[in-house]
Image 1 (cartoon, rainbow, N blue to C red):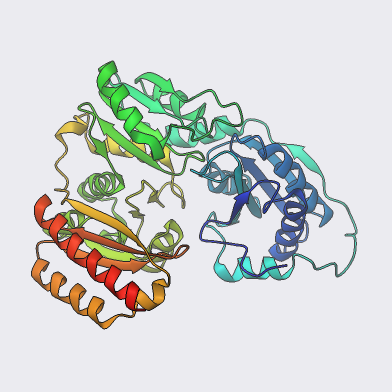
Image 2: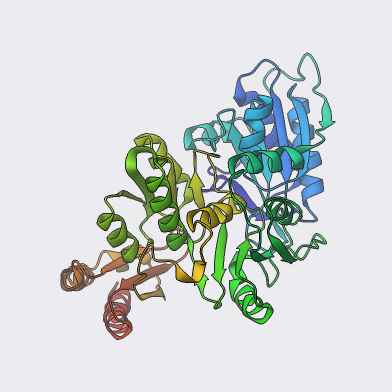
Length: 441
């Protein structure tokens, strides 16, 4: 079996091609063996993709073949897994989802008994066991059971956390991406008193993320304005991220939502450690705002798992990404789109998202430059000198970030500056240098 099937968010690929039933059986067996528990109790949940039932059955069979007891939780947002792990004392959780990807893709990611995603070392150990048949059949074959009431369990946890949030009179539009939030998101907003309109809430197995959800938030922006709604939220397919739209149709990304939450939690004495963790993609305006308010910021590479690792290392609770992954470990050690939307409204103290003032977002330009060899292009002395010069000219006012893609032959050039024309000009100069460097490599 090829090494490093696991990426930054589990194993993901086209269902039936990379992610086959055979691989799911092996993963279920290997993860159960690796857990080390005598009779591991394993929770399995999924999103709405048509391949989910096949992979659920195969994964459960693998767990049972290794002597594990399987509990099928059905369709639930990803953050429900760590919450249910704690509630029921499971040894392992598995989520079958490909997040914001098209329906043909699917994925499998695991959570440990502590509610956190498995470490790289643990995922490598599972890969090492994929073809391991040592010991043959277990002494006892595991059982597979339906776990009833899981959606209500998740809703109860949300309601308990936001019991003091009164959304009476708030007109909310929710885009559920035809994914895992289609039932839970409208329900919790209604329970908290909001007037709810839901779209993309009729999954058919193939329409998940199709022209909807957080990857197509412009559609929601138009609907918020046309419908006269107060605010809109767009979730992704597995419900671990969210983007917002104010009543004017302006998209509010993860940076602004995290800034709102950071200042609110600090004001109420609930910002553990007084800091927040974000990624290298986070807008410079966020850093400026946090500095102004005395909130320490730690920066990680792109990926919510790296944000969570930083939070754990520092003993902090809040972090996230511009893409809308927002983690508040005070509630759950995972991104939770629904909880993040509610936290945003809590942070406004009943106010209007269009009147937010937590940060001033600087104009940002991002250009992906296709190259033959990203490492050779990044090794150019001319590029290093150009980045240093542009960074110096923007010091204290903006920033430059030039980095290779982790998956494609691309060099990503990002510039943030106080004005649009300056951001455009700096970005154009750096793109030209990257292109020259690539042609000489």
